[in-house]
Image 1 (cartoon, rainbow, N blue to C red):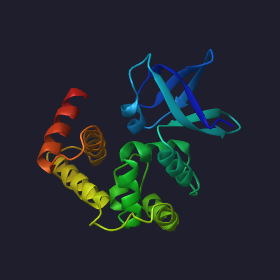
Image 2: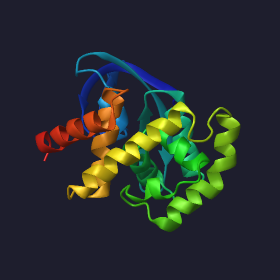
Image 3: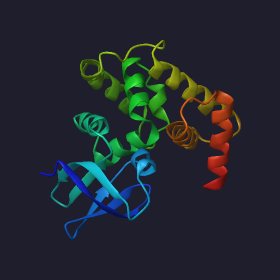
Length: 201
C-alpha cells in the first residue's frame, strides 16, 4: 500500500518514528539501527515502508533502505517470526552481520538477540540461507569484508561478556559503535561500547 513516506521527522525513539507528510502524521515502527540513522527532528527524511494488517492492528514499519526492508520481509516469511521479532533481529545486528551469520551458518551469533532462541536461530539460517545467497551472491566466508566485520563484532562482544555484561547488551552496544564508526580495532570498539553502555544505563 505504501512504498515509502517522505516528510518532516517530528519525533523519533529507539523503536518508532513519526513523520509528517502532507499534513498527516505517520507512526512507523523502526529498528534500533534505523533510529541511529535518522536525522534530528525537523529535518526531511524518507523511509521505505512495510504495511502490516492484523485483526487487532494496522502497523507501518519503516526502513532506511531497500536492503533492510527486504531482509525484514524475508524474516517474516519464517514460521514463528512476526514483525516484533524481525525488528528485534534487525536491532541486534546490522543487515550485513545478519546476512553473514546466515550464509556462514553461525546461529550462535543470533542467540543473544532478545526473543531468539537456538531453535529460532537455526530455523532462520535453514530457511534463509539459499535466499540470501541468491540476493547477495558476493556474501561468502570469513575472507569477505562482512566476515571480518562479523569476527570483529564477535571478539568485541566476547570481551564485554568477560567483563560481566549480558550478550544482548554487548551486541547492541558493539553494533551501534561499528555502525557509527566503521573500521575500529577490537580494542577501540570495546572502549567505545563501554562508554556507550555507561552513558545509556
